[in-house]
Length: 457
Image (cartoon, rainbow, N blue to C red; front, side, top):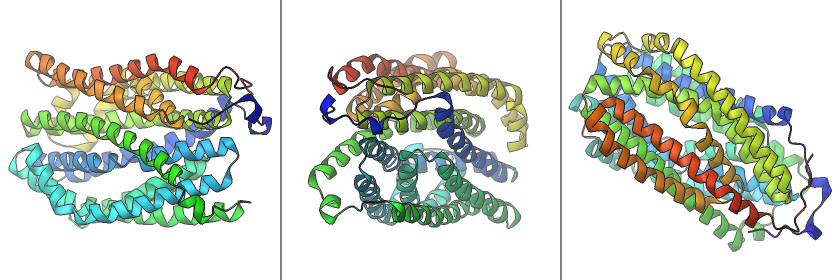
């Protein structure tokens, strides 16, 4: 833990936490994150127009497997955001750059290993899911291709983490638009017009990641050129900094692994209900992700502003950042839930022409919309704890929430079937948010000693 004593406080590191400041980060990143589930909707529509529920299910299961693998490395984005924001708050330009370069080195090394492990990942996904053979075949094609882009995917995590750590939401938006825009064009071209189907959608994603990496590295290089300080080799190799990064990253990886276990169990249980239910759940999950990504912009604001305030030792500024971002997230969650209820059926109809899948999706539409109520606190508290490097608490609360999810599955599915599956998912999110929120007061007492300044803009 950093020592934020009153003697070390520098008022020049104070910064405003206002609605305008929150929106300056949250709105661009909400728009950026919205492009990702929108792309998922388009990809599903590309495959859905081929008239086979198994292909929709295969794409959905393959996406879950890929998310499982790469979300375990989400620390390269979220951990980098927290560390860069803290360095920004502490006024240390060299450490900002060093945090990115360390993350980029880990990204390229881990990405190369994952690319080589593509056949193994595809086999493990097939064995775990135990889905219909046609679903499994489509899933394996998708996974094998997507894994080849692992170095690019992980490098883009580090780039986005650096940009967001500095609070440059519009730059993050530009990178995500480049990624998803290229992906969208290539998906339609390769998957639909050229008839490559699932394989075309997978190759399109790699093309988007490549363009985003080129754009992102150019922007980072320009930012480095403007900095007054440069990280020395000794700083880049600093054992204490590496230990801190790896400890935090290990906790975030464990959190991500636990969260992806929830999604894997959700997808696997849905597969047991048959291809039509699996396909309907996949369509609704796209809407679910659409809603949660919309709120993620405010989580990014909480992570950046909270991390910066923590780095500067500003207790009241930190608390104001938590309050404002959480209130905005709750409000946007309600608005987006209403949009899902109003337009969800139309979106589902646009993604598939299979009447039985449409009917099942309509029956369960309310569950996708309910994410605005069940998930906002979990997303916000998660971001706050990452920004302040309280990663161990975040990890432990996520593991507890997984246990609650498994218990809810055991109790609710026999009674309510697929409705019980969706209800258990929301129980998990509520548990995650409340357990982190209950831990926050004690963490603030420990993280901001009584002698620490409490000035706020």
